[in-house]
Length: 115
Image (tube, rainbow, N blue to C red; front, side, top):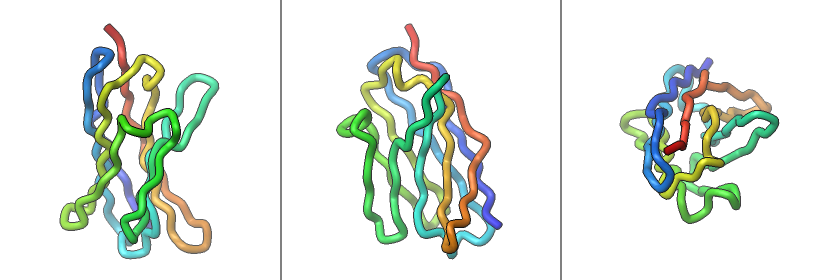
């Protein structure tokens, strides 16, 4: 079992920045990749992923603006979001991928980009 807790969401003006955190606990040694997804009305999107080897990948919509990183000592994955746009407004979820297609999700954190 893996438990994931997201934090760091909130209200930010267009052009602003936020950093999301995803703290993992439990069987974290089994995690093969961690990713951030977002859910807006009618749309769900994988935002960024980081593997256990440190490889990263991003959705085209966030490339150059968002950065995914991890702190192994803290068992935490971060999503640094810069130059935020109104279309980035969504609930952001953290996901952990384990072997045998086992996945765990956090409960999400709301990001609202509005003036």
